[in-house]
Amino acid sequence: MSADGTPGTKGNPQFDGGGAPATATDMNLISAWAADHVGEHVANYAALPSSDLWVGRLVTTDDTEQVWLRGASGWKPVSAIACALRKSANQNLTTTAAALTWDVEISDPAGMHSNVTNNTRIVAPVAGLYEVSATVFNSNTSGYGAVQARLNGTTDIPGSIQRRDAGAVAALPLLTVFPVVLAVNDYVEIMVLHSTAAGNISGGTSLGGATVTMKRLGPA
Image 1 (cartoon, rainbow, N blue to C red):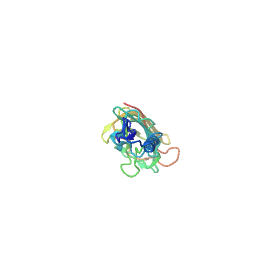
Image 2 (tube, rainbow, N blue to C red):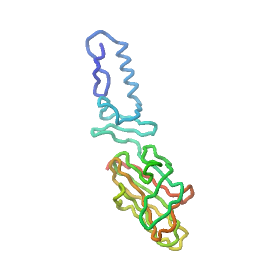
Image 3 (tube, rainbow, N blue to C red):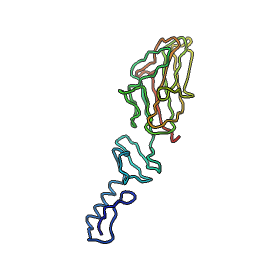
Image 4 (cartoon, rainbow, N blue to C red):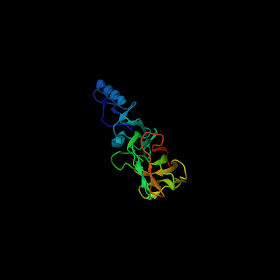
């Protein structure tokens, strides 16, 4: 029995029925293949050759605790995909909606955000239905403030707006929670404004520090 060099449907070694015996070599091939495909970890599942792609294959990627399942139409996430961000410093308000910057990643194992490049954006690495939640603390004591969300820099996201009058309160907390369907590389930004352009959105680690989370709930 000898290996004929043609992988099976799961990349497993195949063997000729005839030929010179090669028992030690054949057994090593089986052992090596099994070791590679039990509890397997790959650096980049998208770069696997076609011979290593089959429906039902499970892999983990990098050290981010992400698990992927190979389906008939491609790779699907099994583990949760989410991130949580906050601001380290205050951000001044204007009368025109402006995107909040985020420069502290509380958690971002799937690489949905960058502190350096386009740090207003939270990017979907996988298509699906997402839930976004943002809390901000507006320092104004007069006029009205608003928080809302924008898709891909141009489109207002339905159901994302909250607007409140400050009145005589010491400050104005705002919360928005909304669902949104995203394609791969779509991004969400949290927008804020105030009617008088005064005050700011609080950053830092105090109770009023602005935070945002985005998590994938499942396929759309």
